[in-house]
Structure formats: structure tokens, C-alpha cells
Image (cartoon, rainbow, N blue to C red; front, side, top):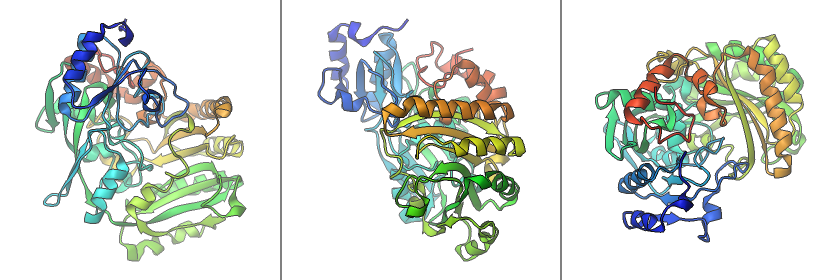
Length: 462
């Protein structure tokens, strides 16, 4: 049983403070409540101490403090984790938000990024060079959490998952030591962090391969929710044959309001958000079969890559209530699409939605054992999210989300993309890593035998 921070001798915390360049935030400090906030407003945890790290030495000191004093340790990067696993009650939070830097090497198009950076900051830095690193679809997401879980997004079909573009990382291990990992340095550990989450240490620096992406052609197309089954059947056939340059995720959704036209507001839709990264002179031709499906609304065109990455930032600011459920899927047959129609018609609040992200193209051409990400053969990573600003609606959005998930799960591939999971228990974690779990547990035993890093989708030491 871990000790609570409040039960430690105050002199121990004073010694820690003397070793830091960053600062401590304690429960009686005026900014404590603000520091406790994360992206999901449904999460209410009260850590005993925050270490606001500004460099690797701070991280090493914090890890040593947590281990030596036997306190519960959580690690927070961007704070987007759905289940609030960047926080813990009564324990220590090692906060990386002060470790920010971005350095681009144009000789080989690589990007080195700090453990506390957000993806919007990376996009801002790489875009003037005509480069991008594959990431998700919300620019306020933390680099660390998204990367360690896999990284599915607009560029996955063309350039793979975020982990497929990770070349190297600097880490602080559970024993407080510092290592660099890559295909040639600590290769087992490098394999484990490419999808195995924060189980193996704290990443203070990532080195990514960037790719030539400046302008994309994309945006939303919407159909009345009643057409969900027809559109899903067409979409499944279309997206699996589409060139790698053309990606799009399909959704059931409600249009909450501006910037969409008023005639769409508060209505339910089956939507697809597209992103084409090929030759812009061929983009309109690529979209002809899409527009031939006669969407009731479309707003597709050329835009800078950072614009599509931040398309939903304004609609989904930090602090909303979120409840998540997720699965992988291999097909969108009649029984599956019928459930999407049923629950898409009963979306409870304007921001609640369901997304299905294709796992095809480059993302599917990596072996299922080459990284911990075991579902390379799945066709889609699905997520259902109940979202609303009002805490009074927390039960309503949670109930809808759980019922939608329960109806779909029998048709799923079994596990889920870990970045889309709440705190759902050990069996769910095992199902999500499938045949790779035992190897991950062996590596965990080697590098974190006492499971110091367990506030996550936890892989227990074998």
C-alpha cells in the first residue's frame, strides 16, 4: 500500500524542493485547484504533491523521491488522458508541461520534441518547413500520451501511426537512471514504448521522422443520420480501396452550432472528415466519388495542415465532461451499421459523438509484433464519447456511451486502442495488447519490477 504525501515528514519534501529547478505545488497553494485540472472535466483527483519539472534533472529527482518514499506516482504530459490517468489521489504527480522544446533538422527531416509539448506546438514549428509528424486530430493533445499509446490520425494511411515515426527517445527509468532508446540502443525498451504507454519510464525527449506535408485538401461531408447504413456500406468499400493519400474518419454526430450553417444546428448526421495529402492538382478528382454520394453539406477544400489538425479545438476546449468507450472493428456490416443508426439517432448532447478511424495503408503494413500495437489487421479504431459542458449531464452521456458500446462490442475485434480507454481494468488492457502482452510484461519486470509507473493502462511485471 502506497503512503500518502501528507503522511511524510515535511523535511523530506523540503529536501526534494532543494534539488529542483522547477517548483512544487501543494494542496494549500493558491494555484493548487487550477493545477489539478485536466482536459476531462469529469475527473476530480487530488494529488498530495505536484512536481512541475523543467528539465531531466527534475524528473530524475521526482522519480527517486517517489520510489524512495513509496508514494503513488502519476505522470502528466498534456493532460488529455480520458480516464484522468495523469493524476492520482494523495500521491505524487510528475508534471512535464515545463519541458518544452522543438528542434528541426532539415538535413534529414527529423524533429526533436520535449516531453511536455503539445501537438499544435509541433505543427506550428514544422509547418514553415513544409513538414509534419503524423499525430491525432486535436492539436491540444500532448505529444507524450498520444505517442506512447500509438497515434492514429489524419496521416496514418500515408505515413503510419505516430509510433511508426518515432526514431529515438530519452527516458528516465524507475530506478532514476537516464537512457536513450532507439533501434540500436536499448532495443527492447524502444519496442515497448511504441504503443506500451507510460509503463516503462518517463519520456523527456522524442525524436520523430517528419514528412513533406504543407497543404492538405479536406474537411467535413455530412448526410442525414437516416442514411447511416447506406453511407457506412459505401464508405467501407471506398476507404479500403482509396489511395494512401486519401484518408477520412466516419462519425455519428450532432452539429452543435457555429461555425456550421444554422440549418444544420442540433441535427443528427452521419459525417466523414476527409484529409487528402497527395498532389493538390489531383485533389478534386479524388473527391468526385465522395461528392457523388450527394452529402447534404460539404465544406472541403485546400488548407494548411495545422488548420485541419486544429479543426475541432474550438468545439472541444479543455474542461468539458467526457466519458469514453472504444473497440477495434474489422467490418461495418448491416448488424454493425444498424447499431450506429440506432445510437446515432439518440445522441444525448450536441458534442457527444462516435468516430471510426481507418487502420489501413501504411499503418496496416507494419507487422502485428513489430510494435506493441497488436491490431494492425483491424480495419478501424472506434471510439464513442459522451461529451457535455454541464456536470449535470454526466450521467446521461455516460449511460448513452455505455449502452452504445455494449450494443457494438459483440461485433468488435476484442481489444481497444489504449488512448481511447478509461480506467477499465487488467483484462481489458491484456485484450488490447493481445499476443504482445507477455513480452511487454517481461520488459516491465526488467525495467520497473516494482511497478512504480502503474497509474496508466497498466502492464504488470511478469
